[in-house]
Image (cartoon, rainbow, N blue to C red):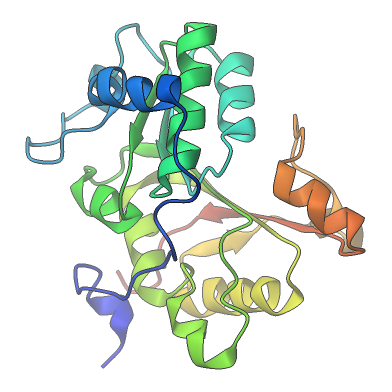
Length: 238
């Protein structure tokens, strides 16, 4: 049976450890006082329009899964104040870092969730998100762990459901096997059109790209990155 047909089926954890070194007092305080105001409440029904999640009107809503240190998410939120951003990150230290930056910069267009992104995807209304960013996800390099990679037919079905018609899925990685894995899975799903027009496109960073800390580390270690853009298309026969 094709797992694409069962997007609500439970899946294995896509992330590893939840916490690193102890938080500084200010970080812990931010998590205790600021995070509750920013965090999505998945116990309540999602609003019909995700714009209602934000205190000021937004023209589009983007979702970033696994935002790490939050550099990209904060950059995009500053660059596009008319857009609303939902960032998902289960790693406590990364969430604490982002909450601190959101507070210091006074950003009003970011909401967050600190657990499994599939819970958010299943909560979101159909056709409600303009763009999904999956940037340098855990590659789970050992073959026996590949089933834990976030890109799967189950999760692509989730992406396809929540993206608006013509919405975008952006993927970046420095791991060749994961890049190829993603291209093959999107092709096999049938509802994502790869937007590359020439050979160099997949090596060209996304518009407005500033990089991430992980990307800088990969380059120092001699690994180049691939940047894939897919557009949601209609599934044939459905």
